[in-house]
Length: 349
Image 1 (cartoon, rainbow, N blue to C red):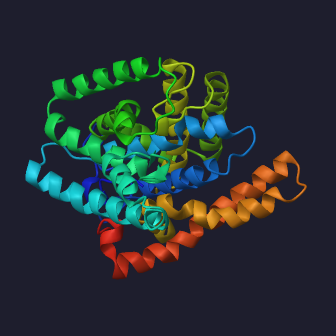
Image 2: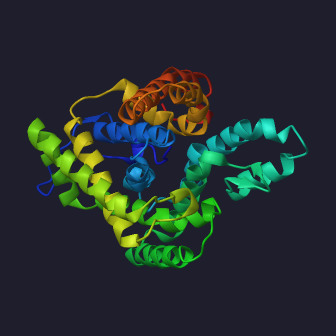
Image 3: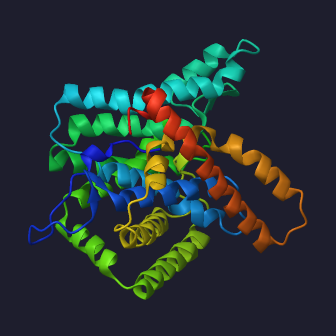
């Protein structure tokens, strides 16, 4: 779902200039684990498990913007940066958006509205499907372009951050349910900038190294505490719909919940950093395809589960299992696409 490519994720040094996190080639294993878990949570979120919706919405999309920022370099020549954005994001976005909306394009003279919605980044337009769940990719494209032009200097990054925070606060004063990828930049850019800041902040690498070497007990305890804080904060903040640029009742509560939720995932990912997983790598490579089509694979499972007389706990557990199975289905699909149609996954392998 996110861009940047792991060739962007070169190993940072710690405060004493020693490599501290495991890599395979130029990939960081913990990023693969974080993306895989994040994608599982995205799928699970679209099952709307009772009592967990606000918690899931509070951090799952923000996590991907954070990781995208972490994997993004500065001081890249504009022509090179635009070419990379085009290859890794624009082409997959256009191909998958059109394929996904094709059934509506071919009925009722809706092709024009659907294409316009895709090109402008609307989830839907004139009651016709636009980019749908690929709004995230459209928003990331805009963020990447803005960062390419204005992100090289610290002043530019601070200016973008302040504009987005103030813009989010103003926008949330209006009762709007418009889902537009351009407006979503306001609430998403701060997480992208935070991720990029961590890329160059040496103490972050030290913290990740500490998480990697920590005992299982410490890691589990940290994950439980961070998850509990996220759940409590999200309970008071309500649902945060990033696809509508809504942060819930309070931007401060949203920031706290998103931060602790992301931190919980990073603790888990750091602990797994020593383990290279080809499955996780393919989940990461094919995240944009999974994002576009996961609901189609998931629907038969959720329909069957909904017809059963399960308790809430059992239902939520069954939905989580269905989400995991859906995620696994896309691994062989991604393997085939990366080999035969690599442009659909942004040329990633």
